[in-house]
Amino acid sequence: MDENNNDYLLKIENLDMQFRMPALKMNTLKERVVNFFKGKRIKAKTLKVLENINCQIKKGESLGVIGHNGAGKSTLLKLVAGIYSPTAGKIDLKGSVVLLNLGAGFDMEANAEENIYLNGAILGFSRKEMKKRFNSIIEFAELQDFVKMPLKNYSSGMISRLGFAIAIDVHPDLLLVDEVLSVGDANFQKKCIEKIKALKESGVSFMFVSHNIQQVKNLCEKTLWIENSKVMGYGPSQEICGKYLEYCNNKKN
Image (tube, rainbow, N blue to C red; front, side, top):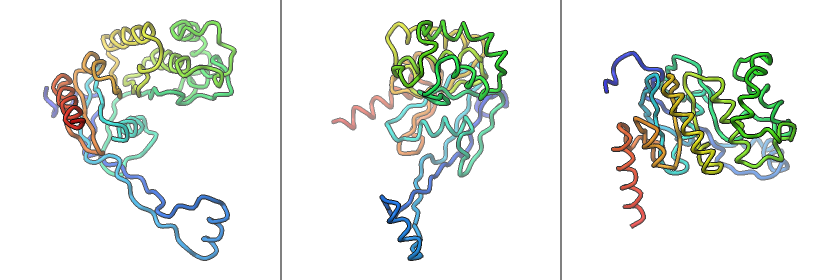
C-alpha cells in the first residue's frame, strides 16, 4: 500500500504529545496557600505520552491501535478527535470524526432521550434531526424499557450500547472506537461487529483501540502498535498483531 499518495482520510505526521505534571505534591488547600505566600513555585516535570507517531487511514479503511495500558492509545484518539492539541507534529483529517468511549459526552443525571439530543447537538445535529434518528438509536441499543431512566442508574454495558448506537447512526467519516466492544454481552458485541463491517462497506473509516487482538485482526486492515509512547510496529494487522503477541509472551517468560 502506497503511504505517499494523497487519497487519505487521516494522516498523522511526526506527532508528539507531552503533559506537564506538578513535581511537588500538595494534598491540601492549606499546603497550597502556605506555599503561595512563601513564594514557593511549584516545579513541573514533562511527561512524554506520544513520540514521533506516523500513520494514515484511507476512506473505508480501519486502523487498529494496540499496546499495553498507559502506552498512549486513548490519548492518540483524543488528539485525532480534537480534544487535545499536539505538542508537535501534524494531524490532517479530511472529514467528520466522532470519538466513541464509555460515558464520553454523557450527562449521567439525564436520561437516554435527553442524552441523545445532547450528543446530537455536540455532533452538530439539530433536535429535529436527532428526533428522526431517535427510534433507530434506542432500538439498536436495546433500551426501549429504559428511555426515561437517568444514566447514573445504567450499567456500563447499557451506557456503552447507547454511545455506540448514537455514534453509528450519525455516520461520521471517521469513527474512533475506544474499547467499547469489550463491554456488553456476546450477542450485542456480535451485532456491533456486524454493524462496523456494514459501515466499512458504506465508506466509514475506523480507528479501533482494543486489547482484543483477535477483534483487531478481524476488523482492521492495518495496525499501529504503541509501547511506552513510541511506535513499535505499523503495517498489516496479521503481521503487527503477531509481533505484539510474541512480545507479550516473551515478556512473561
